[in-house]
Length: 136
Image 1: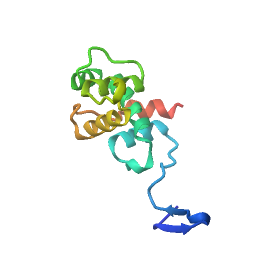
Image 2: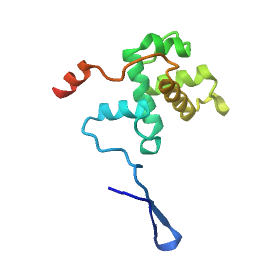
Image 3: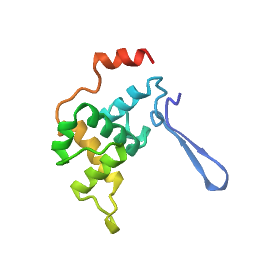
């Protein structure tokens, strides 16, 4: 485990920086790790934002569909994480040339608003989650 920043000079002018706290923690409970990342408890440098945002989108669709639909003015909630981010991006006008949704911006917005409580008050874990995950 890296305790402090280290810089290594490699061949051909390549530098390698080893910094503490940058890699995704090795958590046995991956669903719990995703919930921690979605809540902001794990630094954004440790994960792929769109991956966590897709997880968060499905989590919201499953547990808090009314809050998700209300916040982003969705008539219906798509059935996949990428499709939910697509819908969020379209509703917010995060379009690139050719009408393509900026998925990165949609992911950032969803996670930011989730963490700020703008989507509503919610719990990322319940006692039932622990019981269900212990049986896996």
